[in-house]
Image: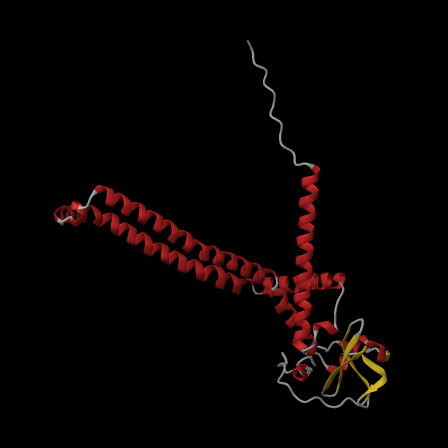
Amino acid sequence: MTRSSTPARKHKPSLLNVVITSGLTIAVLGWLFHMQGRSYWTAYLGFYGFDHADFPLSTPDLQWLTLIGWTDISIRWVRDSWKIYVELLIEPGLKVFVSLLVLLWIFKSIRHFWPKIRPWIEQQLARAPRPYSSVSPWLMRRAKEILAVSAGVLASVSALPALLWVAAFCLLLAVTTTLLPFDSAGKLAAQRNCSRDLASLNVVRLSDPYDGITSAHRLLCSENHCALISGDRVFVVPRSSIQATELVPAGKRTASDESAAAVEGFCHLFGQTDAKAEPKPLKQDKDV
């Protein structure tokens, strides 16, 4: 009599499971991209001291900032890869290696000396008096049960803080690896922007003068507000008060290699240190 063997069918995920898994993955990645772009933009505005509510961005713009942040972070990681390799891999690796050598030496020492001192320890234990020999076996069993229950309760109580600590550590690790790099990238981008010459910013004309100021350099704008610089003054006005924008020629927007060191920048207007030179008071623009 022969048995007919049928090949086992491979389990294929249903279409519903694939759709649910894909939807959750896209939702989580979309939320993560949104938060990374928001962290980048918030840090960029925070460098200048602006309120995030005055300069909101749409979701596509935040996702675009996320791509810019990933580019800046990747460039920095490639540039600082050796430093990261030394600080995060070589130094901790050497410490772990030395610790393992010490533990191995301790283990070898115990294995070497234990056969020699074990007979002496057993002999001393055999000679030691036993005060519990007169205690009834029933009481000893109850004492062991109480100790076992107490040990279980103590282990449970001790495990709860440990689980909370592990959860907090995982959350901190997730925030550190996903959001903090974009916070740093946003601050560096703002610092690079204010390290330029003030004359490289476009000039706008105001239909409603602000404290006698009719024109100023435009730092950034949103749908509702614009941040402007006039001399040593920084202020935010409604975008509807912008009457016209005078564009700076492309050749004046970036400084040449010879004059890059002479650019003063305007970081000191926001209480920040310029990356290229010590902050100096800016001269009043004649066109402003």
